Image (cartoon, rainbow over all chains, first blue to last red; front, side):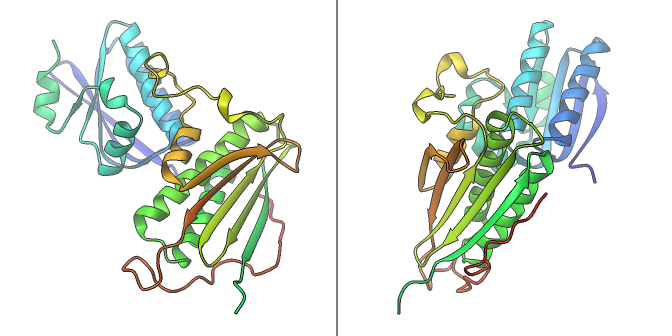
Length: 115
Length: 164
């Protein structure tokens, strides 16, 4: 069974990826990588990852978030995070990645934050 | 009565699935030892990171190499050993993932997470020739809200070998 599910929708030219499950070594990290790469290949460089249903993330998943962030930024875009669960929130605090990512609790605010 | 140590040892293939298997196994032992949900999560994550380290850095994903996982449960602590068959490494050589220049690194956070989540953590030369990660968590106090009083999860004395 897949450990992560991803569904992409678009709102005002911004790609919102709803993720659910685990972003961890193996299928989860690979799916996140493919999802972001596919969006970039389609020319979509304004991306919000909705992590509201992501209940687990390991160091591999964290690395994949950072990799996605960097890949999008290198294309002149922005990747932002939405709806962190407590565990993911705590991990981003612990690893100081809160200073790297823009994180939002409301989708409308996240969408409105793009220039 | 002399304190009893329960011991469980398994040998895992160098495969992604071994990471999940090791995590599940240790979480079950931790649950049975009386750790609460948050502590089980931290123990599970630490084991996961230890086995990822052995899988990726130690054994360099070579399928002919093995990962050795051992769990000891005493009256006071749960001790976990993860051994690989790589070249070993020194803890002092591991870059700090919180350093400004490493924040955007896509790897290198596993050791940091294990240190953060466990009470004790060290890396020593392993008997299998590679690195041995040794990490421990103090058991919850008996009678505390997080304790269920059941520490009977592991195979006492036995050392079964299990491939993943």
